[in-house]
Length: 212
Image (tube, rainbow, N blue to C red; front, top):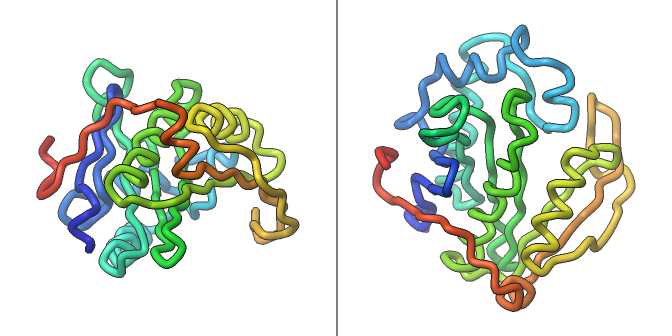
């Protein structure tokens, strides 16, 4: 079933390229999350660890490859397309995790600070929501953010409302930030809500290579 995950997801402004040895430049991946080049603000709520060595980047990519091969989901590198500031640069990561028995998907995303404030999080979410419902025929898509993460809250609330979803829960101490437990706010987009919203984001999927 792994061949159902497209290698490239293309939106109006973004290319999402699957994180795999075949498509990732390890030096670039290392630089994107090197401990001496990423501010605390960028990773405060991101749920990703910074890299101390190139080997950390290699392990990071290998874990994502395993995730894909085991059908547990897919991780994409986010790259602005031509015409955008920083076109072609690695702007962040987008993940769609799968719970096949429940026919559910979970969205997560992190962006480097130079790419904040452009609406990329919502554009990435719209593309992966379409992937979840239209290609994988899932019943529900979920996402969450840590309490206090106002940037994510605003972005999530906007696209969840757009696609017919709603806030569903606040769970106590379910997340972790800097090794400490934190509360999470959860949102759900049901398949019926997506269908009734009438929203169909402009998105294209490509299999069999990252050249698109």
